[in-house]
Image (cartoon, rainbow, N blue to C red; front, side, top):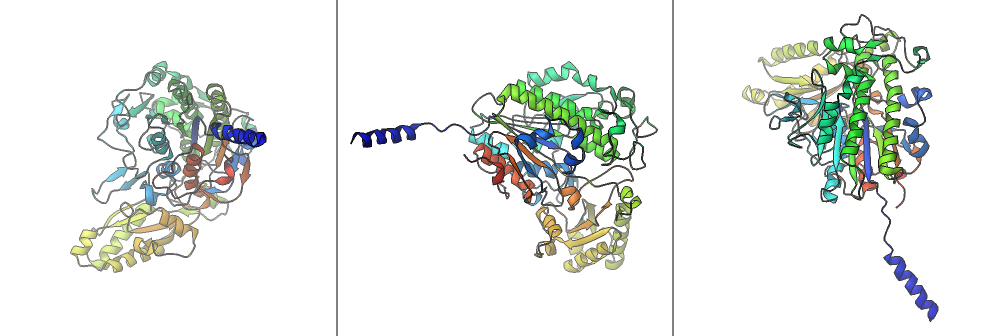
Length: 542
């Protein structure tokens, strides 16, 4: 009898023992703009042990991580990371798109109902109002009755804004030219918090108007091409795209403080500001989980300027590795090692310069958009006997003039078929579909599926098309992105910290899986438009 009573007491006491909190005090999301997965192995020999390699030593690596839609661009990428949904749901179909109602161009974060904070220029007239779904950071705010904080930081406004959703305490982005300040919008606040104002006043930025030379001797950068190639762009004031770069001297001809964007020092500046936010907002200091989203944009600017085979790009990743180590060290000290979680991914990959492919006997080429627009308009006018039946051509989408087609009593299916046929005959185009026909396709074709996930009925065009692999609509120098091919879709997903299990997988994972994985880590609801699934292998069992 006594033994039974003792057992009941043990069971009762055990049931009353509080469950130890397993969720992190802070989630730090890192988005490295234009980062291909293969950079991790390509530049591995020059990484230290405390940056990228920390994910491999302590965390989880998804080695076959992809975008599942066509619009591999900055705005859609950040929106999909945050919402767990593709553009077909969250509505950010590009960095900017043709608005079918107003007939004007719509930037993905512009909203002139709001004013800039910390700036008098229009660079501050931004808000997340075009984003049609909640973010995992929004769900965390709701779950904590708004006690959990959310902060977004980036050089780019869209990188700071779309990654954190609608309820954030603050999004901060960079205003260059003659200002050199971090700014925000009245959507979030009426005035900059003291820590942000103090950071701007400190003029830390001026320390980066220095000489950019390679971190290691340039002859050790054997993973990249020669320092001077015809595939690289050249800064104003320079005759060749070669090290070193005297940034203080070059600033005047290259947008003032904007010159830092296309150097690794832009990422270092973002790290400085993120650390100021970490301390100023006291992130991760209480039991309500916070979210800090950091977008490193300089890798994108450098890729666009010099191409993905340039020594400038390699040096950017060598230096970013050191900035990550600095960030992780501060998190260890201020939040506590094992008390926070970090994930790192990208908003899109990048293609080789098309001329580089051509010169190396790899299929590639250029799509001449201006020729396509002119010839399509001429062909439509000749066939249907009237002008202005094509309203806009942008983002590989064709918008037809519905009112004009109806007024001219032109058969809708007939003009769609004509435009599709013309597109398929044009040099550099691989596939073309009318929007109606696209949604009927069900042939398990990955490219078609990515087109479908990127098509938003209210915002997308009437005809969509894709270019051939290796083809770009870009200049002769610098890399670009925006296709459904693997060089644009295959990006990293790395995680470590509280609640994250050590390991790796080659199983296919999607960009839309990040938000539900972080939501599971935080113990909150998935975002409203979520279509992804938690990556179970990455999470520790509760």
